[in-house]
Amino acid sequence: MDQIDRILDQWRAERPDLDVAPMGTIGRMKRLTAHLAQGMERVFTAHGLNAASFDVLATLRRAGEPYALSPSELIEWTMVTSGTMTNRLDRLEQTGFITRRRNPEDGRGFVIALTEKGHKLIDKAVTAHVENQHAMVEVLSENERKTLDRLLGKWLGAFE
Amino acid sequence: MDQIDRILDQWRAERPDLDVAPMGTIGRMKRLTAHLAQGMERVFTAHGLNAASFDVLATLRRAGEPYALSPSELIEWTMVTSGTMTNRLDRLEQTGFITRRRNPEDGRGFVIALTEKGHKLIDKAVTAHVENQHAMVEVLSENERKTLDRLLGKWLGAFE
DNA sequence: CATAAATATCTTGACGTCAAGATAATAGCC
DNA sequence: GGCTATTATCTTGACGTCAAGATATTTATG
Image (cartoon, rainbow over all chains, first blue to last red; front, side, top):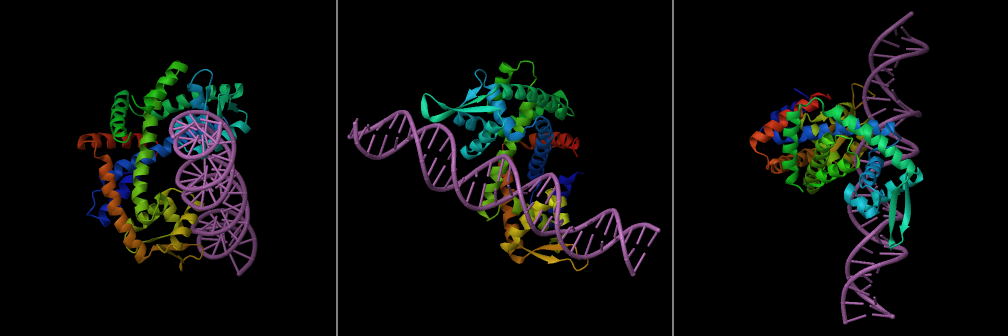
């Protein structure tokens, strides 16, 4: 009997006409994701980052040599709006983790690249991040994780 | 091979020292939750609400007669900070969905109550919301949902 | 070529959220 | 009872985000 169950019970008492089972599933997803985000944020903070800046640096890092993408490409990978990306890049440029140069081949665009400092930071941060993620899924057995992945994949497929 | 798989592949190429399987699970959770939130937001918007205002009205509604709680109780149920709740209540009061009266038994506190207008709205909105949630989980079979619920419950238990 | 359409990015304004601190009222303790 | 701690809520300032619109550049078209 967790908090979600209490909420469902309240609904069943007040609105017995509704079948609130899906609300339980979705509610647990949401709450779990919040806990996971919070757990990850701790690692980001420990490295002087947050989810937003980590997201950008990690995208540049895993893109491989030369660790450079256009704002548009970053927008596609991270699924944020252009205004959000501009804001993120502003901050990362200020802190010296990326450089923002005009694209010599297209005057409309820019090239965002990891600096040496940014590269070192994100490599360290990702290592800790992955370790942390391992710790957070540890309660589930290998089989349970596999089952969960399969179900999440199927569900996600309905949206993407 | 979805977007998450592509991200994992990039990491495996760039950082073969990392086991990124948990990143897949957590990434799918996050993305799925975003899709679900977006789907729910559509219903809220259709009723002149958003996730924040729906959250408060729904909490008051399912609390049962007399559909009134203190800001502190609302904060507990919705898990937001006091500043956030003040802001939410300001807007809901402005739009006439709730009333905010001093608590006659404790001069420090307030009593937040659904108005007739707010009660009618949330009853309609919740009906549509639950229907929408049903539609969004429909791709999973009854058994799959049961399994998912069990796994999410176990995982959530590790945090709460 | 000149002009219109498309593209890449930035700017602006409005939200929702949080952390930290301010304010006011009640409760507990000598 | 009077002082102090606690509680309830609001205020302030900073973020991160988005939608819509502005600006600059390139591409396509006649």
